[in-house]
Length: 284
Image 1 (cartoon, rainbow, N blue to C red):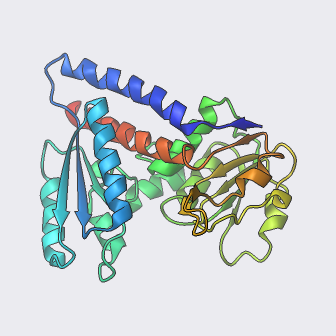
Image 2: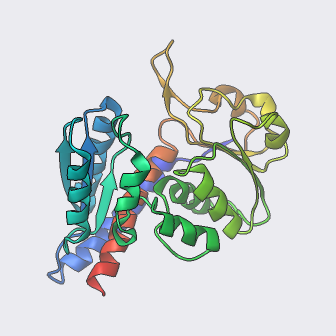
């Protein structure tokens, strides 16, 4: 069993990205700019956002955090997004989720224009994924693919089972894997027998947020296991994932840890997406 060390790979990619950005700085060009919008004070979001801003600073990306109270008027949030859409020095706009319960998240995600949609959630960017065009890919799916490729794990011809079909991870990742010539099975909460599908899989990717939904008896020998979940165990208070790591690792050929697997790859991919949008804007 080998660990797919997302933390190590993210650090390597961070250094490569910082070098690319510094080369533009040496030409006297402005820094890439990422604007993060946060509504309310969700504790987990506070942690995630502070980490994103820290990494942005380390690679040479300028970041701005716009905080709004939970009772912000819906029109005010739309107006701010629209203002950023037209701001020539803003390359990426990130709307930190979740929004307060009375906001329809999808409406605000779609208000961000595709050219600044750093998360790859706009329906135009997702439609391009479906049809196999180059676009801005969602950070977690692209981070997972980059992690596999960094370890020289082939995707083509592989049987891959995905558990979890959200618009943020499962659906776009499924399409991206199909585009890379994999055979993809997508399971969700309505799937009657997930084990039947996971036992056939060369690669299992679980993104449900349900603790230990993937157990040792659900994978075949030498399967590759990617755990997107991150949950705080109510008994031990430790961070764990969808995968029962201790029991699965004895059968897996490769496995991601939680934490330190998919999470760091998601954050560095966000920075790479910001840089890619920046390059498009300054080279127009």
